[in-house]
Amino acid sequence: MAILKMGSTFGGGLSSRMGDFEDWVLQTLPETSRELFDVWSEGMLFPDPKSLKGLIITGSHSMVTHPSNWDKKAMHWVRWALDAGIPILGICYGHQMLAQILGGVVGFLPDGPEIGYERLKFLGDYEADPLFGLYPSHFDSFAFHYQTITRLPYSAKVLARSVREASHAVKYGENVWGVQYHPEFTRAIAQQYLIHESLEIERLGFDLRTLIQRAELERPPDPLIPRFVELC
Image (cartoon, rainbow, N blue to C red):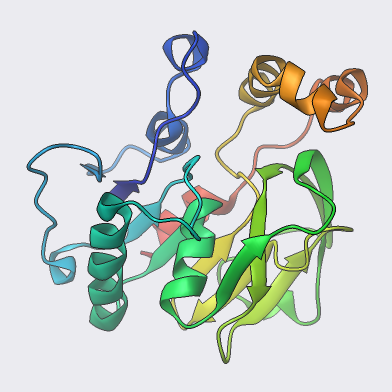
């Protein structure tokens, strides 16, 4: 299973205590062969995607609307991976990245970011989907994003939404999916994320105490990433 690391989480102790985006994905994976490709690593060579069983694209604090040269190189390679037909799962930034590559449009969420645990509502015949069919009709998951998909690519299918985010889970193709929420976040990671960003969260007008209290609730583990690996 290949992991494309598109960015790093906050410094200031968060990453040293809790790890980074790729670590949180890795801890949800069963013991299997793993390959990590860090977009920001000097001299990193992208593999032939046909050699991969599947690809998970991590989150990032970058904005899809303002890609760096590193991001652009990664997007070009992901386009190649899509053409190769391998299974792909994009998370948060990776989700928006897939949408843009496939002809969608990404922009800022109206009325500011979506932060904290949100109730996802799964839609229509989602149970027929090989990846998302294992979810209950409603599921709480952690979100922290400023941007969103403002126009989906042609033929993309929305499988889940929240009150403020219309495209929390999307099927882009036969074996290509994206999620705006963070299936790799544990309760502890979510709490530390909120604490680290407490000043910004309060500046934006959110009730930090309520967000942290919701993050403290016991929830079942998110089945998405292990299921994706099974499908691959």
